[in-house]
Length: 405
Image (cartoon, rainbow, N blue to C red; front, side, top):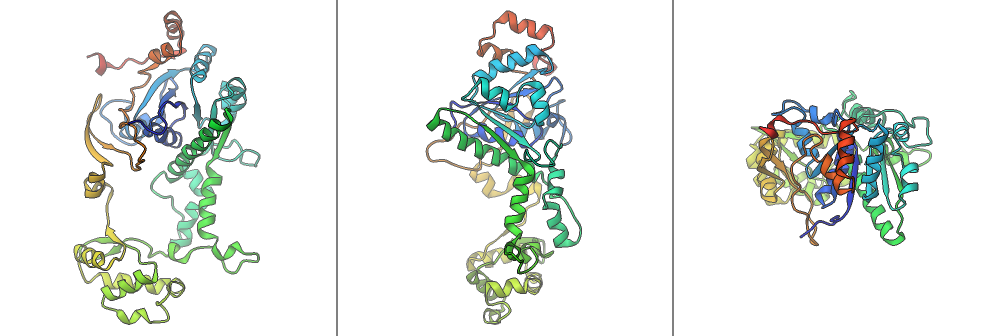
């Protein structure tokens, strides 16, 4: 079987997380992804803690599986010409280089789509063009702060915080992959590529606004914005006699089953808790009675009770627990594997399935510049010209001692 994107070639001029999430998703579904790196390599190669070998961090391994790497010094004209040879064979180009730098390097949409009308050019930016923030630099935490994500924590707990996960990068990377899919579908009908702009600020602000506008959607506002259930400081895993569980009884049927399970059936007819609207209006009291009730039994006891009552509840997992979660092992999301260059690793598999066929599991993340000469040869660059590119520093092929030992 082959993936839905088998035969699609992607030129990846992105780095760190948001772009690699997008191109990694495309690779997972069968696209051939060529990762174009500077001579220093993607910063993510050195982020995320200890690694076995330099520039092969665990984070880089996870975000860049199934890709091939070429190092080009795009400040040199010959390197830019080599990149154009690669682009001529590509269906999609993805970049999170800032727009002004794209233009200086000649990899902006205006330059490339004019020369290559079938190319789909996807630029992931911090802020949409045409506004006062256009062109400003942005990282995940910057976007979380300006988009209101950190403000949701202040509304909940009184203190602004960032989600301890690069949530804006992950979400916007997935959105980029989604929109690229839309553009590929349109190209099938029109025969032409197009330029795509994916702004992180606007996308994350849209999430916050659609989630929390609520009564402020109306003009004039019927009440301040904010979903009280979601913003409650008690909207968190609930302590049991020996740990925590994650529980959410939202519908009337679920809440009524929960009341029976905790031995409080009278709450089913209590006007403060009988309906969704009543429980929302009394969120603080509802969450408080949940917290008090769950102290009486262990996590395992409660999970068994709630499972029998069809109340949504699951174990609380810490990060390390996920590696051994029985569902993640059975579904193949987490497995143990041998990396070709880094040895024993945990491997993260595909979360989603398509009945029409899945691509084979992506290969290991590439060493820096490991595929450069081969990629140029495949693009029709003569061996002598490749040697010239190497000699002048336009093509960088780093030496990896472990591979020549």
